[in-house]
Structure formats: C-alpha cells, structure tokens
Image (cartoon, rainbow, N blue to C red; front, side, top):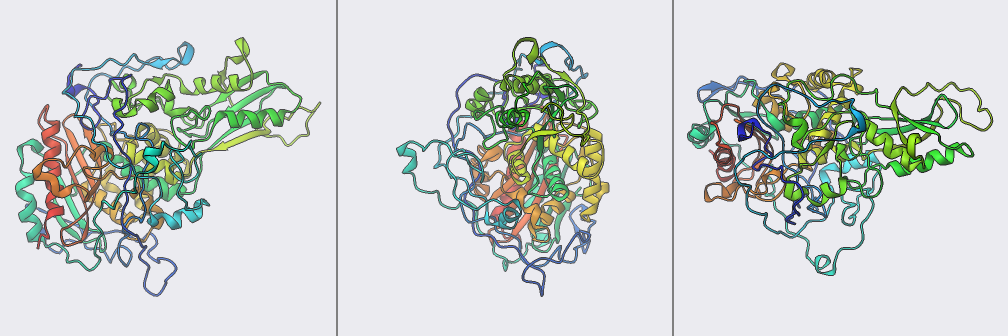
Length: 620
C-alpha cells in the first residue's frame, strides 16, 4: 500500500487530493469535420450490412506474428464517417475532465455495506505517488453540439439538433445562466481533427512494419506489447503483432461496454426511476432502474440528469389527499456483489469506484457540488456513499416532506400492480405514482467514454444484461456483453470480462477485437454505434489525452489521434482512430500488460510515439 503500483492512479496522476479548486483548463470534446454515413450500394437511405460477420483475413504476414484475420467483405460499404461539423464539448471544464481508471493488487476487504447511515466510503487516504502533471493549458472552450455522425441517432432519440447553452451541453439539459461577457465574446474554435480522405492510399504492411516495430521494442513498454492496426473503410487488417492475444485492457474495456449497450438498448433508450404506492396508505416505494446519473435537484453532478425533486412532485400530486408516511427502497433490479471480487482492495476508498446499486444519486458521490467544482483538481476522485440506494431513499423521503423517524428508509420490494380500484382515495398498492428518465443512452455513453466514468460503465454493462435477459450483476453483464459481441459478428472468444469498466485485472481483450469494434462503429453499417466517437479524447486537446502528445517526438499525434486510454499499474493501453499524413483513417489498439514498475509516464509516451508514427507517415 502507498506505492503507485498498489493503488489506483487515474491516467497520469494520483487523483486523491480532494478539496482544491479546479484549474479551469478547457476539456471535453472538440470541433471536428463534416460527417457522412456510408450507404450500401443501391440503397441511398440505409445500409444493408446488418450484423454480418466481421472476419479478418490473413493475406500475408505482418512481422513476427501473423495477423491471423481475413480482410472481411468490406464491413459495410462506403466510407467511414468523418465525425461531425460542430464543436462537441462541454461548457464547464470543472464538471467533466475525467481521467480513466485503475490500480494494484492485494487482498480484497470491503466496507460493511449494511452498516448504519449509508455513510461515505472513506476517508480517502492519498498514497505516495509521483507529482501530478502541470496545470492544463487554457484553450478556447467549445460549446456542445453532437457530431453530424449522430444525426440518425438523434432522430431516434427525438431531440432537436440545436446549439444549447452552457451546461445544458448535450442536447436536452437545462440551460444555465448566460456566461460572462468575456467568455461569450470568444470565437468558436477552429477544427482540430484532420479530415479523412476516403480516396487516400492505404498504408502498406512493409511501411507500417518499418515505422512501428522499432517503437514497439521500446524498453518502457515491457516484454509484452500487442498491437493491431486496421483500415476503417474496408476493415482490412494492416499490421499485427500479438494482435489476437488476450491482454489486460484496463479502461479501454469501456469501448466494448459502449458498443454493446448501444447495440442492445439503442441510443434513444432512457433508464427509468419509478415511484409506486406501497402496501399501506402513504407508503411510497422508490424503484431503482439503474440510472447512475440521477440527481437530487438542479445542483446534481451530471447536467440534464433526471431529478428526485421532480419525482417527488409527481408523487405528491398522485397521492392527492393522502400524506406520504414512509419511503421504501427497491434496488433489487441489480443482483450479486456491489464490488467485483477481482477489484483491487483500495477501490472502495480510492474515490473512482463505488458500490454498484440500482438506485443512486450523482454516481454515489457524497457531495455532488464539491465534486463538480473540484473535478479538474481531483481528476474525478470523490468520496462515495457505502449504501447509495439507502442514501437516495433518504434524500427522496426528505423531498416528500418526511422527517425524523419517518425519513428513515428500508429496503423492500415494490408490490405488483393489482389493477384493483382505489379505496378512500388512496392509490392501490403497486400503482405508479411517478417516473423520471435518464439522459438518452447516447449521452450516457458519451460521458462514460470522455470522463472514463467507472460507475456509469458498470451500470451500462447491467443494461446490456437486462436487455439480454441476464441477471443484472457483474457476471450477468459480462456474459451479456460476450453474447452481443457475437451477435455483431465479432469473435467473442477474444474477450473475457469480469466487469464493464476495466477496473478488474482479470479482464482480457485482444487488440484485434478492439479494432474490429471501432471499425464496426465507424464504417456506417451500424450507425447506432457511432455514438462511441463523440466522447473519445483527442490527443493534446481533451479528456485523458489532454496532457499527452506534447513532446517533440509525439507532436504528430496532437489533434490527430482520437482514442480511449486505459491504465492500471504495469498496464497501459490505447485504442482509437488516427488519420495518416495521406488522409487515410485507421483504427489501432496498442496494449501492454507487463510494463516496468514505476514507468507510467515513460510507458505512455512510448505508446504515444507509436500512434504519432501512424499519424505522421503514409507508411507506403
């Protein structure tokens, strides 16, 4: 304990220093070029690709290891999307600058989940760790508009494509008060990402080998570096080294969670939180549906989230003259342990994980307002409640006007609706008294990826489980994710998960499966999956890549690499997209799970050199 390799460390920093003010550096998403969905031949309105198998060919050998995959029949025809025409970001950097996940080993000992009070998991004791990176550079802050690549998605969601105000951020949230005049006068930022050229030449195997293999042998990457590079438009495997080997993915696991929940639930799906009449007059049962972003009121952590005060208002109206007498919490939708048994033992107290329950507010954060204010300084760490479902029930009881003993809550099951007529004006047991719904799934996925939000990731994995009639547990989510991967025509034998966030060291994903997932989302055959791109950090600009690609040897990747990162002690991963110097859009995944001890910064720069090499060469 107390060493970097035995504690969670969010992408480059310790992340446990609560209470200091945020730096104010701009974060979030960026403006990107115009997008277009490719269409199947003969059908201008839609793609006929369906869920055809995404095989990989093996036309030749690429270095020491065969690619071992076929060049599939096009993955869906046409050219990949080009990711948007407007700035895609957030208005307040202190809210969503998150860093990804992960840690070290030890014997797992969890806090008492049924102890009194539902108090915070903590205190959070900082370990000894390297100094955090310097404060972020200020940049013009982009306002939020989802990329044009999501127009089809948004039509399904039923949201208008507008330019919302600050904090309302992602289409549909409440608008905040107007920004200060100095900020309002800032011009829109110019585009950051290079626009892909669908007619650009594809890099050659020899060219990629010459560019990448000297970098893959860097000492900072350790003894096991597994790599996959593919062309997004065609799905052609271009380079591989250990590309089919199961590797610890850390937080890039969230790409698999994102793709499968979008496939299983759809981008328009909203998670409900309901209140129903209990067995006795005045009893209200709040039924958790698994929305981790649920807020108490307008001061919640996640902009635009569903709110308990709105639900309470519906309940009071539905009860009419019947006064609420008590609140019962039904969080039974989720089953199994609230922490994954393979998680390191400091996750409950580290500020980046939480008990995964079907009812919680603000991702189980104890103080949502402080967590939002200090997000940048703490890199997303926050004290979490040990019993978030009971805490949410108490908050709801207070909103209903209950106090003292009446405000205490217990867990129980909501009665089934009987359909019987009400007696003495009181609703019959099981009658729905109110319902609020989460942000659309497209937005939950976006937050999960851009902020590497572990709690959202775990709840979304359970949504995959529910959609596939599996238990909403760690095991059920993993099994359902595997099943959906297979339904999409991808090799499900190349993924083995214990959780949806990547906190578990027992997770395994092959690099080639990651590039398959990104290709499937980007080639237009499944437009509903394109939502994964909205939150991907951009090299040298946003999210977990904000402070990377700054050195002279990695500058070529700044503003060109767009990727999800993953970090555990001795584990580093990066997977995403890059546009070559010739304008060809490639997908890549580079995973190392045997990096040297205490080498995180050097290992990351070695990974950045690999992806920068892809950005800087035609590799022909």
